[in-house]
Image (cartoon, rainbow, N blue to C red; front, side, top):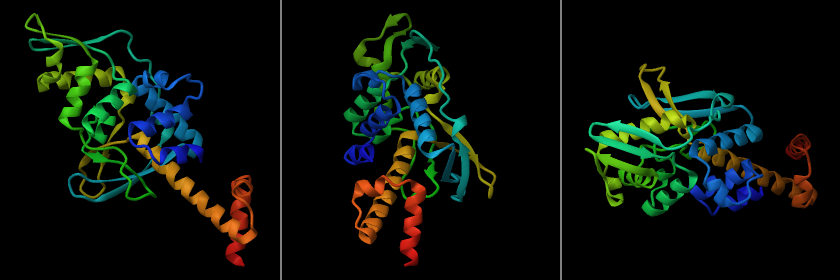
Length: 269
């Protein structure tokens, strides 16, 4: 409940950091958490989700071809599996370009989001045009379409260590202007090195048979579930406090099973 209350005034990167602090309580400072590669953070948040709400994830999306609503379950054990990121810089070559870069961290995402005022910057390498939503909660959107080009280029500029074009070094101020084929190669290399950083599913429509790529943004998904849980719990407190005169701490001290039993007694009264 304290985490939910603290997160109400936050958005995007702020909520991600708050949830990550809960998922990794042994972390000493926020700077330590912000230095974690994105995929490692996502794995921590998937683990937190499993601990709080179990392994089954009920989600829905819309078919990108026909607009049909699709609902299905995911096994959270198969998502967010932690991998060991590659050590040292990564290198890609595309045409006359050679670029060395590092994997994005949570700090990079926060900085890009703040600079662009673009919520989608919190998932900068997302490729899916559709979004996944929790089955029972509307209208919260989990995931987002491809982030703004400006946000993506800002991220590339932050994470690029060096770039050479036709044997000549590219100045730092020009790193945000890499050509699109190079950006695609960087995204592919980052995905291979840190696959947990982005979970994109191909969901096949049972009506038209077309596949729709959909991104699962675990930060927004988990927050939506936490928000619904907290509001339901506060409603329980309201009903039981009115019926029995109990204080909030007294209601919250009840086990979920006993709380549900008392609510059933109130409904029958």
